[in-house]
Image 1: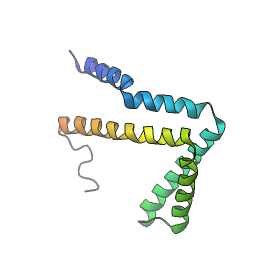
Image 2: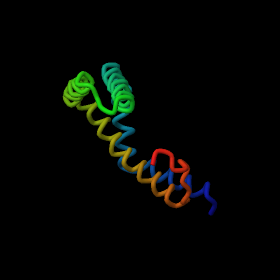
Image 3: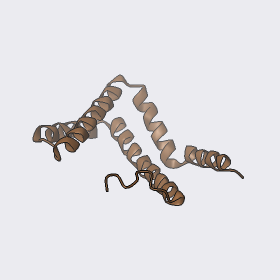
Image 4: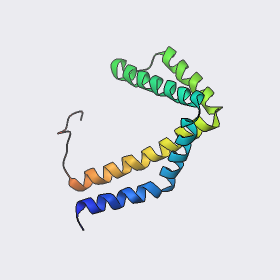
Amino acid sequence: MNIYDKAHELAKTLKISPEVVELRNAGKKIETNETNKQMLNDFRKLQYEAYSEQIKNGKLSSETENKLNSLGSIISMNPDVAAYIQAEAKFGVIWEDIMKILNDAIDIDLTFGIGK
């Protein structure tokens, strides 16, 4: 069996994993509702702004923290958006673990120590 066969095998396994099925189903509920799509889009924009601010300033402003808390409260009251974000986080953990396993297996530092 070659490396591409193994990659396709992993893809098939991922496709039917409970975490991916849950994320896909949660995504369908978001996709069919414009309000939910906009709420998720606003959340993404705010996450990006917060990340950029954190990198630039080393911390978040109280204004950004307040925005995150407010939007987080609103999202927690929307079961479909909250379920999507939760499903996405679960899948993110699996994806990071898979990437770590693959990176450890090849034993090559592709960052060449940058950022260490």
